[in-house]
Image (cartoon, rainbow, N blue to C red; front, side, top):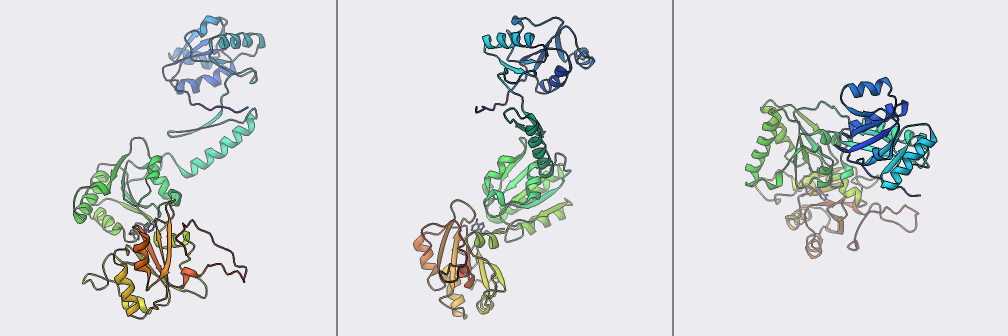
Length: 414
Ligand code: SAH
């Protein structure tokens, strides 16, 4: 039998509890916690139930069950041991199509109560077709895991600059996720995976930094202002940034702005696209006997730009891996400069677009041809450029039995 799980919204709805003994005593509090209007029918009440009655939390009819007791109820909980009496309730519930929970006989019941654990707004219900004990064991394991990953009162304050990883929502850190779950305000980047916002508190404010309608530097000022203002108002602010917050993400500027305003800042490093995206395309940024170094540079300025801080001739002399972020627009000039300064024209190059997502694309080429190939293939940002022999380091060699490293790639791979 396949069960159909439901979460009942009992708030303000009548639930009948037949019986006033130990079972009813255990079951009533959960019904009350769910906001149900609990009506107990039983000649007797335990002292605990009597206390609930005295406090005005339950209604009590001091007699045995009558079918008409069910008339205005959404659910009935049978909490008597006498099989005859319990059977009468079941039959009356059946007539009225009201679901009936039976503590005495689960086979006769039309609904089962699962083992439950709650964690803030999260309710986990576990059922195991009759094996109550196993359901409880599973519930306990989940409760423990939740306790570890989502503490309810973390006591976070100020601003946290959290790296979201390269795009796959599972690539955020445990700490980053924990902070996100506790955030009062989340300021998100274009590159941060939107799905992560599904796990926020209901009342969390989400500010989409990509939608702030100013020029780039005014936008940064505005972001800084939002971080500082919200934190000063006592909110815990998570600034969620693509990859790692301090790799070309202007995270340092945000940290400084907060520090200058006297707002405490925490940094939660993230999985940076500069290493992870090549890895997910089957390219290790270092490899024994191939590359003993990797250099990550920004390609947002062309090599001859007066504001460029990158020593391109020095990069051309390196033997190791060069990873270029934000380099698509200037790819032709970057490749030309590197070749002009001594890097081999046939050096392997990979472009990985939207790494770690379902839309990941990989293009392999050489330094001499990559700009043209990228244009032809329509490669778009965000993409990383990887230059060096590591690009082919894990290629399968039919002769040596090396493992084939697989990564999601489309037909563009040569
Ligand atoms: N802080 C980020 C980088 C910000 S700069 C990090 O550590 O990853 C933005 C650049 O990062 C993009 O232009 C692109 O070059 C690269 N990038 C970020 N996410 C990417 C992804 N999923 N796939 C490919 N490149 C990505």
